[in-house]
Image 1 (tube, rainbow, N blue to C red):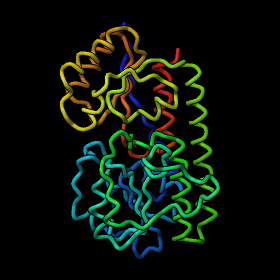
Image 2 (image 1 turned 45 degrees about the vertical axis):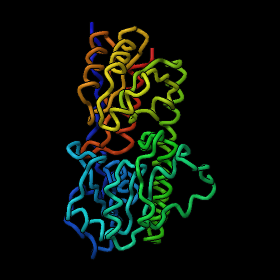
Image 3 (image 1 turned 180 degrees about the horizontal axis):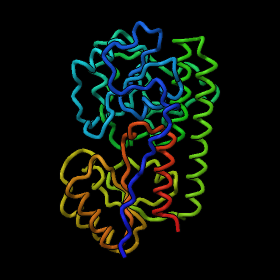
Image 4 (image 1 turned 90 degrees about the horizontal axis):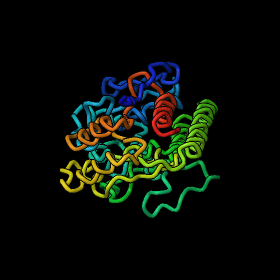
Length: 324
């Protein structure tokens, strides 16, 4: 019997956690309300900001549904006006959401948090002083553009350690903008980081249970989760890179990947829901024919879901696929 594709069922609760979060407010909305105006490149970072800021922030997420691809998104005039009125902008960086850079060029010098810069894997990044926890945001300049960095996995929102630094950065910057809210921001950030620490524990448990199981990873998106779970990536070189760059997978590479799937030595195939192309579909079909679970990860949160719910679902789906 074939094993079914495991979809990431994202919960629709957590309205309280996302208080103050709006994905499509009118440009400039909240400017006279006394709220901190936060613009996030995607609703992953928007959800984090809303949970930490609560009712003291007004959050706009530019990429808020699967119909918008951050890699190729072309900013609108509405986006430009929204960023112009921002107090704080949160971007992923690393070439993932480069549309933000053009928007910031016309902005009124908001503080900017760039998530990839909190990753210990970021090029030339020697890591962050765990005791600093203060001046995380920085002013953005045109020279800081974030081109795609070869060999670096920019999908850092699936790296709990990096996200914990981003959470601290958001709380610190919100405090700079609204000192009266410091206690609320820090409490919300601490609660969120407790949940993130739990995810790190879950992945360590999965690492022990999965015992280095082999997986095919068709796109880099779930790479951090797979690495933290101690899984062995046996994807032939060039497959994931081609999918990520939007180019055709070489026929020989595709054939090699299909052979690996059909060998019986693969525990699961990990894919990305938003970017599945013809080659990825062939690999997925081969996995289903062989009775191998396919886990489709999403780049965005479903409307109403919190980051913690989303991550929990992702880890549980991964565990269901690879743990004995």
